[in-house]
Image 1 (tube, helix red, strand yellow):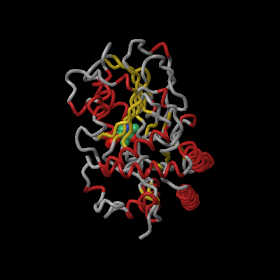
Image 2: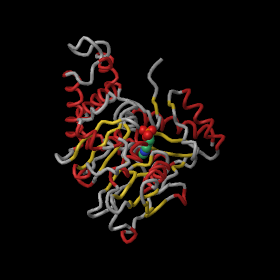
Image 3: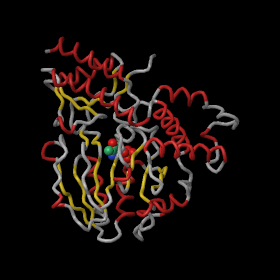
Image 4: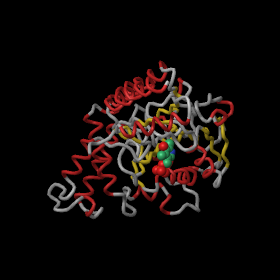
Amino acid sequence: MDRVYNFSAGPSMLPEEVLKKAQEELVIYRDAGMSVMEMSHRSKVYQDIIDEAEALLREIMNIPENYKVLFLQGGASSQFAMVPLNLFRKSKKADYVKTGLWAKKAIAEASRYGTVNVVASSEDATFNYIPELDKSTFSPDADYFYITTNNTIYGTRYTELPDTGDVPLVADMSSNILSEVYDVNKFGVIFAGAQKNMGPAGLTVVIIREDLIGHAMDITPTMFNYQIHAENGSMYNTPPTYSIYIAKLVFEWVKKMGGVPAMQKINEEKAKILYDYLDDSSFFKGTVVPKYRSLMNIPFVSPSPELDAKFIKEATAKGLVNLKGHRTVGGMRASIYNAMPIEGVKTLVEFMKKFEMENR
Ligand SMILES: *Cc1c(COP(=O)(O)O)cnc(C)c1O
């Protein structure tokens, strides 16, 4: 069987080149005489892998010296607790923007440890837009301000970052890290689960400004304390060694592709192909307010749930898989992360045109 075009929201496609390289090095890694999975994380050969992964990520994201890069486990969902446990230190107040299910979960978790001020929400329209932010509603004494840069389920993204002044901006970047250029200096903390744009599940990357480390609440479990991981080079305990290795190969691939600016250009081109078609079609339509459309996750609907189901079934048979929308929104969703080639998007649009002709 050939490889399909996998539109899964996560875990999602990896570049074929990365998989082939991993295959080449799978049984015997270079001159180690063993696979990366079998290595001690304390060995020199593994230290070189993790060091290179960090160096590459620093290079492609242009991460300043005064930020630490941590390779953790527990998924982005653990960060929903780790962020408040480590950052609540003065007022124990934080501002959150409620733009979807992941933001809601983050709000619920932070509320266990301090006061959460929801400055804006788009829940009134099933999160199909990013709410306008009014600075007068921000808490001037907040310990941090929290956003989800790309809302995976609903397909929205911030096209402009909020100006939070001296209040550190915290971003869940799980579904759009490395897909567009961000100035890391604008953030206090960036975190992302790897399984959308960086590698396999099991790895969570945290990029944190150094002055925000070392102030965890007393109740913070050791494994949830950023300081512990920063002081131990992400090796307080066994890190997700193989996932870090694959992420390193993905970072190499991004660099080879021309870095994040080049990825962004390709992503804009890919998204435009699909959005242009959705705007022209009288059959399919996009569900997101155009200004806030994501480059990574594109939800759309046909005229009826029955046709949605038929579309998904026929697309699957053509090797266009995982197009079903999230269970809370229905319809379809095409996730077109960095690893989705432009041919995949073109093939999808051709198939949509054909389906429209046959079913309208
Ligand atoms: C997938 C996702 C999560 C959850 O990630 P886990 O690694 O499964 O915990 C959180 N936030 C966003 C924006 C996501 O896309």
